[in-house]
Image 1 (cartoon, rainbow, N blue to C red):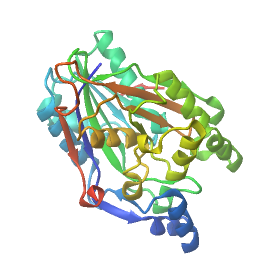
Image 2: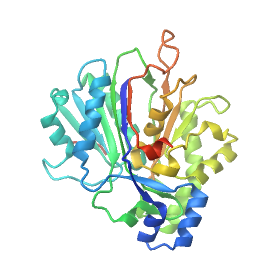
Image 3: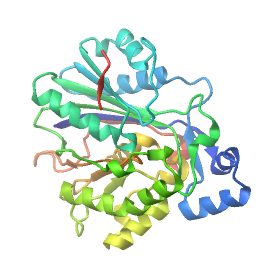
Image 4: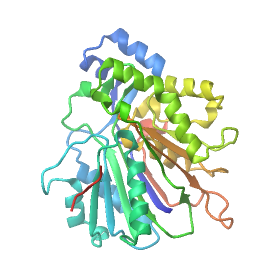
Length: 333
C-alpha cells in the first residue's frame, strides 16, 4: 500500500508541564521531578477559538496539493479519545460537505477504540478497503484536541503529559513510491481498563511495556542491529531509555525529538516523527510503533521507493510546525 502523501499539524500554542501538574493537584516539586525524569517541558495545545474543522480542512488542502492519483473515495477519522458526536456534528460531516476534494467519498468511518494505536488500525482498514475493491484511494485523518477538557486531564501521573497534534495521509495501491508494510496489530485484553484502571492495573501495564513493544517489533521484522529509525509513541524519555538498555538498542535510533516541547499526542506521535524524519534522506526503512494503554498495539515500516528513487528525499510531504517545535470500527455513514 502506497503512502501517497503525508501532512501534519502541531499547534503553536504551548502549556507548561508545571501548569498541567498543578491543575491536576500536584505540587511544584512534583512537576520539577516529572520534568527531569521524563523530559517533558511543555505540550502543544489548540488555541482558544481554534476549531477541528479548520485544522482538518487545512490538512486536507495540503494533502490534495501533494497527492498524485485518484481523489479519495473513502475517509477514516481516528482519535484516541472515544468521544462521540451527535448526528451531523462530526468535523468529517462538514468537511465532506464543503471540500471539493472529498466529493467522491462514499464511505466514511470513525476509529476511536484503540487509544494510541488507532492510526495503525485505520491503515489496516484502509488496506482492506483497497484490496477488496471498495475504495480506490483512502484519506486517513487523525488527532485529538483537549478542547473543553479540564487542564488536569492532560496529566497521567508517573507516565506522560498529553498534547494536541494532527496528521493526515493518503494511501492507495499504486506500486510506485514509498510503501507501507503489512500492519502488525496486537491486543492485550488484560490491560483493557486503560486510563480508567486501578493503580495496580496501570502499574502492570507499565511493567509490561518493554515486552509488548519488543514482541510487536519482532513481528515487523525490525532489524535490531541495523540503522533504521524507530519512531515510537512518545510516552516519556525514561521509558525509551529503559527499553534501549533492555534490548541493547542504540538510543540514537529512537527519535524522541518532539517530546520536550510537544508532549505525547495520542494517535499521532509516530506519524509526526515520520514527517520530521522524511524531511531528510533515509537510507533504511523507518519503523513506526504505538502501544495504547488499553493494550492495543500497532506497528509497521515504510519501505523506500523503487531503485530509480533511492531515498525518500522527493516524498510529497507537507508539515505545519511551530517556531517552538523547530528549536470495534464504526461505519459513520
